Image (cartoon, rainbow, N blue to C red; front, side, top):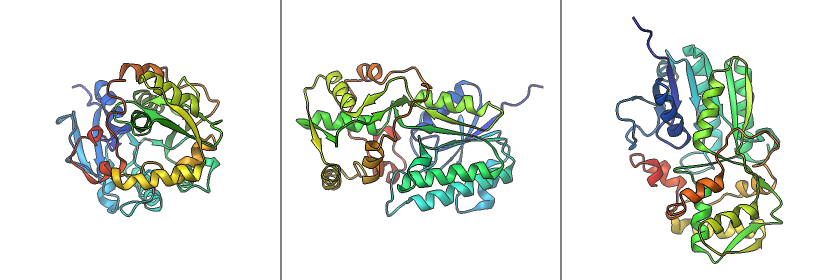
Length: 314
């Protein structure tokens, strides 16, 4: 009798990174179970994915949902503090997930962190990611920590919304002097990095970055040219840019850009000198998708509130 395919658990398989990862796992013949807060969300997997609730407040149920799993891929996190979610809760919830993985006997955990997580403890997003890296290392679980900077591809928020802004504004704002870098990685290649990390024996930390490095003004100029737009670059003080985004937020029903995200960008935390872990160039991908890139705004809060709509439709 043939051995049953290994079971891998993915948090958020119907979301962004989780969906790309799940597509790849299923194509590799792996059984996939997802732990999700959105069990009714539209997705393309049919009955090929086993769906369990992400029962972060019920340790016994959470542990049971991980039993039999060879690998836990954790993509769970929050982008900013909100009345419905915050960094402190996300840290506590993720620690509970790690504890459940220990109790369930999961062989390996692949955890999504953020590039240079240990270099900005004054920022809540980075402080939380740093704390979770430390918690995972201290847990004794076999693990890989994958640190992306910026992801792009179907359903992304940052690159899409930069393009959305370029389509609608006569100029492009650059925070400060613009001398800070960005290393975008395609989400499908992020999935490949995570799967490769799951197969390693040693504990590893991987900077997940793409083959192109842009200074921020170069990124804006490249996207504008690809979209067939001519946009003047205007230097904008960081605080002014944040206030403008905050003022526009209620009209869009979303948080466009947080103060912490502006600080992380301008400090160069989205850049590093590590070798590229992917080969797909953002500029090539943008040319291929220029007819749809930035046509619709991609909302973070709508994706958190509307739990049945397809992720990339919000």
